[in-house]
Image (cartoon, rainbow, N blue to C red):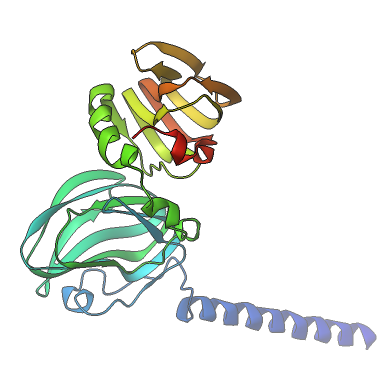
Amino acid sequence: MRGSSIKKNLMFLYLGLLFSLSACGINLQTGPSPNIEDNFKAYNDDKILVKDSQGYSEALSYILANNVYEISGSGTLWGDVEVLKVDIAESLNCQLNGVIQVSQGNYKIIIINRNSITVLVEDEVSFEKSVILQEGMNIIKIVGKPVDFDSVDIQIAIPESKGNINCRLPLAEQYKGTENAEIETEVVEESRLLEFTKIEEGEFQCVSYLQEGNILLSGKLVTLNGNKVLLHLDSEKEFDLYIKIKCKLKAGNYELVLQDGKGNQKSIVSDEESWEGNIMLDKGENIIILNGSNASFSSVIIESNSEEISLEDVKH
């Protein structure tokens, strides 16, 4: 009798466990985090996609720099999510670039204007294309069927216009402090841009590129074949510059060099995936340049203490 009672208890425990797991499955499918295998029935239904967004994204966010919206993240995207809304008085071109890695599912990027939908990208790993924004309201969405992203890196470059432009994704936390980004010196805004065109040559592509605070370069899937200026100073006095490099070099070669105002170059480091050290910058012009020979980085970050340089010590 006792054995029979134990068997009955085990049977009830087993059935209770099955019921709990089934309930979890239902919650995953109908709750705020749908199962990745579920199909988004409106994926190819334009009448539904032109309406307000019905989906969600787990971890997509954006930063804005120089009229470029850089959208990144990972995780599950289910349904349609608005990325950008652009309301303009006349048509203009924008540039859409990206690298997207998918582990499962399908996605597409669409643009909506006057209830008409155009598919810009669908299930592509990388893309570079010019997109025409029509007069009136333009809405750019990412649609998941659903899709599970390993990584999302998209740039939408929009020329300056008198229209209203806003991103519907959350601003990335690390870039919310915009005080340093908005305070640009005359060296950065004027003369440096002119000088860069003389020094820089070759091809440089980076999913996310920054030159703000103590970050000279930061990005994923970076390729460089030629020269890229990271820092350009014309200082009134000497300065001890600290540099730290951490990268994953997939192919090719790179070299970080220091160039003076006469064009003389001094090698700092080459092909190291981890390096840090101090460089004495002389009074006058100092340029930190990254040279690449078909260099391809999975990721790279180059830091410095350049934010410690007083603007009073820089020639204008």
